[in-house]
Image 1 (tube, one colour):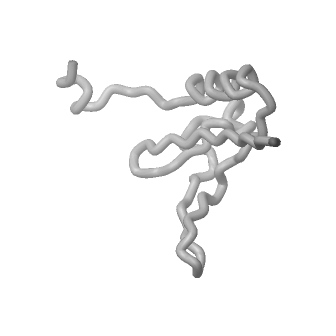
Image 2: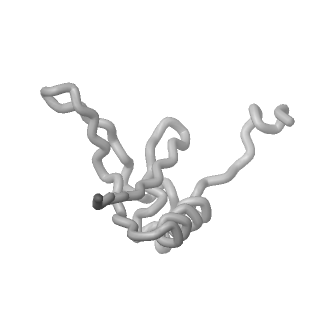
Length: 85
C-alpha cells in the first residue's frame, strides 16, 4: 500500500486567508502575501486558490513544515484576548 501525504497551512487573520508556507513569506509581511480565496466549482467541490501544497515523505518533513507555519503566524493582541485567560 502506498500513501501520499501533502501539507498546507492556512491562517485566517482579519477575515482574510494567508498561506503560512508560501516561500515568499520570508521576504514579505503576512498582509503582503497573496490572499487565499475559497472557490466552489460547478460540482460543489471547494478549492482554495493561492494555497501551496507540499508533499512529505516522513514525519520529520511534516513536523518541519508545521514549525515553519507556526513561525509565520501573525500574533497580536486584540481586545478579546486581553480579557481571556
